[in-house]
Length: 566
Image 1: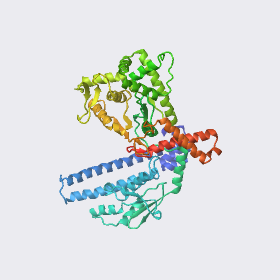
Image 2 (image 1 turned 180 degrees about the vertical axis):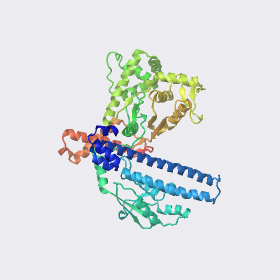
Image 3 (image 1 turned 120 degrees about the vertical axis):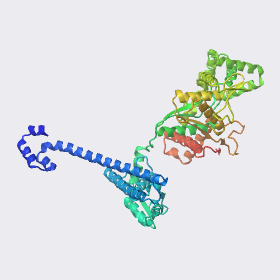
Image 4 (image 1 turned 180 degrees about the horizontal axis):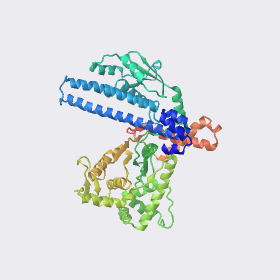
């Protein structure tokens, strides 16, 4: 201030004013050059007042805690006896302090503006917050013991919602020797309700009901905002989620059984992605095992030049059936098939090429289905875990978790109940159990997954229960850090109530089901003469949207745990 005075042309006038004395506001009006200084000082002044207010609030809270501790001691017969005048004095003082605290909280809320609903809160959540605050303001002495009760009004003239806490508060006050009636309590609650853009009016009716009328304009604006900007997801802690779903077997066509896993798994992924989680969608295809020995042996016989010319395997399902028939009936072919498995697992180049050819044919067919259903997946089959299976077996053996059982090596879960996992077969081969143990370790420790979700039929519930139990026992899975879920589902049944199959007894191919959906969808659109108002491109888009949408809805509209007739 001194430096500013020296630089000012009005130095004599300033000094005179300071000597004579005046209020700060008059001083600033007399000398405009101090306007910036005045703003700074006023800001500091307001900041100090806010800090002092919060300090006072903190002191009040400390006093309340001290008093509450004293009351608790009294209730536990520590230091004070029942009927002690000191206890009664403390209780009265505690009530006064709670009341002062509620007034301060209300004053702060008033300074910050009206109570506005958050973007993610529901109407019921917001009303619950508002009336919890109102009850705390009106009746601080009992608010901690009174859960807020908000219900939907059944009669339009009584508003949209009701707060029904009055009678309960009367009972609590009666225990404190405070006499009142439900209607008076309701009036005090109504008077304490903070302003909210969601509420048009609040009124008391009957013996103590607080009726809430919602503001229609606010509702209309909220709906318009959703239509314009979309639904904003609630805020959650972002997690790395790995969802294992669909998972068909290579060399076999996808059937209706894969429909549920694919649709349910995709829906879970979409939901988690909408909530902001980092989701990895995995397709754990069956692309390894003894069945590939018979497929490669059959490939060598049917297409001897497969190494030079890509074999025209049009119907992979028929190809698989042919090889399986030979495997079951031809002992010489079976021996060759086993030899092919050994070569494949040993890394033989020709066997690996045959395996890759078969996988590629399947992969293309799978992708056609996924494209039609608009499902995104990253393929990571059993072959991906081959080296990891070897490592997990070594780790489990080193920790002495494996036990001999009729030539095979098994592992029990934490409580050694139920069915153990077969980690190594009697012939030395690996199993689904081995690959699942390797997979859960890779997903938790390499992929840094925090939440694993497996979407399969309910028949595999016991298997995954044991996998999770063994993973916990081996310290692979830490329940305090990781979450694992098996999302099971019931099978799809035909109109006869039996497993959904064709008339010949075969499983229904998923592509055939989708084609049937397209046919029925087009029939409906033509019946409604939509072809007369839509372009061919629009009609095709509508046909696909209706068909695939109906198929997905037919699945998702049922409880996933139940079997349902398609």
